Image 1 (spheres, rainbow over the protein chains, first blue to last red):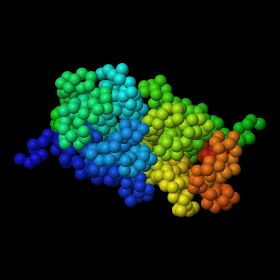
Image 2 (image 1 turned 90 degrees about the horizontal axis):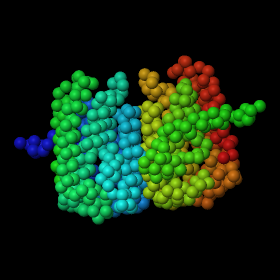
Image 3 (image 1 turned 135 degrees about the vertical axis):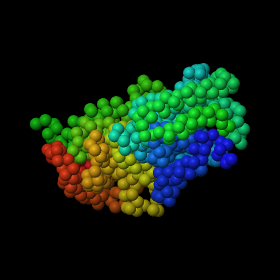
Image 4 (image 1 turned 60 degrees about the horizontal axis):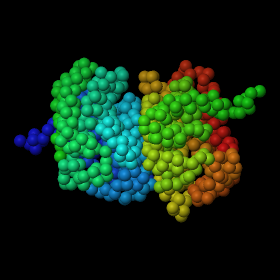
Length: 317
Length: 317
């Protein structure tokens, strides 16, 4: 028995692709020594060492679910991590959450200064679109909509507004903020990967028959992930989380457990994960119809899509 | 005689396309009332009313120079203005230039707050790539490289570094900063437009035979524009410039006239404009070879490319 036999298919997939994703990040970014070196140092500081690289893994998985070789989606996978990292760097700035620590290290602006952190975030967002273009123009549009004012940035605005406005805390508002601030990018990761699987085909982009069910799956997965995150803030240890638990409580953040309690929140996350798993056959039937040649690769994709939904709610960090 | 007969071909082109560019900007951006309205208000505040919309006009001109109907490039043209505007909003922030006024009005963060201005800039940068994707994946890559850490953002970093380091002021450094901070985006505007002209063709992107001379033309044009800008800061009136003259001098900015004097700088700008004009036949011969059907449209494009180079150094604002 190897260790990887003891872990689920998704964590085995993460191990398989961890090194290629790091290599793709290094290939997408200019080297540290490239002028202006101070800027590239700040960008690398924010990106390395990374966490689970969840979004890049979802790009690769989206590619496989659409019948493509994950190898084809590595540059787009790196792009999603750059985009996610920019959002963290800007969120940590003094005019935003004013955070000193991120993943147990001083935040980018604490080390490189506020102006450089702002510009490093801008450059990471920009290079993300260079990487996403590798999956075609449709992938760029998908990513921009998910990350922009009607997606992630919009969610960030509402999150800031909610902190100063506790009288309007409702579950619908929590859900809206989750869907925009984190959910949109999780769904976009899968869809960008699906588009990467169709680069070089006549249409150059994944067909709606695949995108519609995959989007639905991604939306459910994103919700399950975020509610589970909210719960981990209450139940996890500092060692497991790599940050102080109860951080959301300390900030008076709008979370699911704060609204309806821990146990009902965990149940909601489990229900959403089950709903996501139930979508998997529809996604893969669409791929099989669009690409009869995909064949046996889709069985592995089915197992992965099932497992990542379970992982979303069962993980300890 | 109409008024437009008294102005050059480029200013007539600007008049012809001013309204469609504004319409394209409104079409690319979410409406102000779209939630979160506070964010969309800040984005619209930064974009409207605009200035000359120089970069969108260069996108349309690049499209025409590559044998395409400028109409086809309107969404990409709007994208370039969003990208340019994001860079102004972020440059004005307290941790950067800390400016209170822009085009005679309070800067975005003065009206909407620092967090909102940061996020409005992020969202403008993001939506720029949604618009650029309309000109294809190659246009996205071109724009990302011009705007990123090896382009505009890199130039901004070096510009900030030079302010605090007057011992290393050399003409080579001024040129490097100009080329990156403003030149890269001027060139990219033309090239994105050229790519837009080839959307729907087999390759889906403009061929290198057009891109190489057009890039050279754009680099020369961008240099001429920026040196002329530096000189206008010394010679223009507040009414002409819409801002206080001598602003660069007051900030101790690294400029051409500060390095070599006003008259030699003006001569350098005129020489660059002449060099740019000399490139025009090469650009249009390449287009004629790639698209024999472009025909008479190219005569108008030749006149425009010639005239915008003259405009760059002869304008009073």
